[in-house]
Image (cartoon, rainbow, N blue to C red; front, side, top):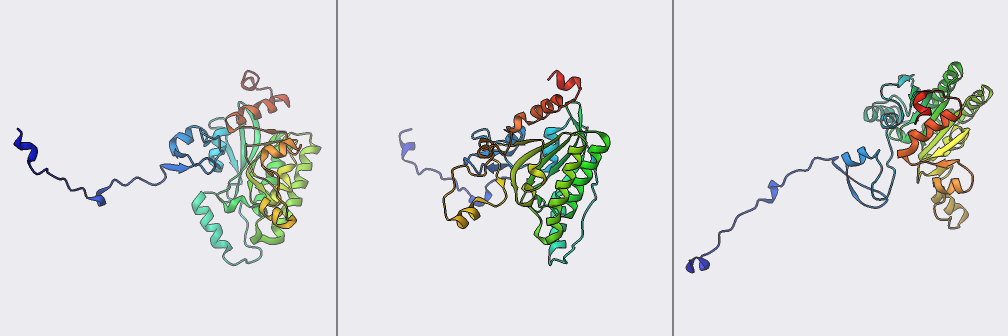
Length: 287
């Protein structure tokens, strides 16, 4: 027994190239607090960081599933697309790539659905599609959604996320600002409710048109909202901007939006707004 203590120990060779491979997409790093999060966990939490409450950007499909009653959504104009009006080099290829990546025909998804039994017309912008920039197709989808809301006497709810007008379409894209703003006037003339929900980011020509024209304007926490980015403004005026400038909370403090609503309370908040504006659904009144 004692002699065994002086025997040469046996060594085991570990081959480092035999490490287990971890599949990609299982984990994500929170850009705000740096926490490493398990994708399935944040999906269960509506894609909100449990540590710092950072709201990750959502696809149109995720937004619809988190907001509407199960099975209530019926999409309109799914195949509505625009061409390349300026023959902009590489634009058709960029559109093809965006469509393959997202499975969408354009940066906005529109249709009809319900929130706790209240029927609405809804538009959702998807930031994965060329940063949800607004071109002719997005502008036309919005206008058609407005026309449907007027025809069916339904409220319009729009979830906005955009980098602005689509530069590859030039003036055709810029005209959509006036076009969508004029469409909002149709809702006003018809006495119908228009709720705009601003998410990260809401910038450029979209923020300067239909995004900021809602009867009620909500925003998700921390959303960047403005026409030009804060870095460009600082470089132009050569001054340091206030902390939180152009974030949702800053805009609420300065009267630009009505309420900052966490994602976990968005569905309930929208339902109560609809109830206050005439929805008689039992599901809403009892919620």
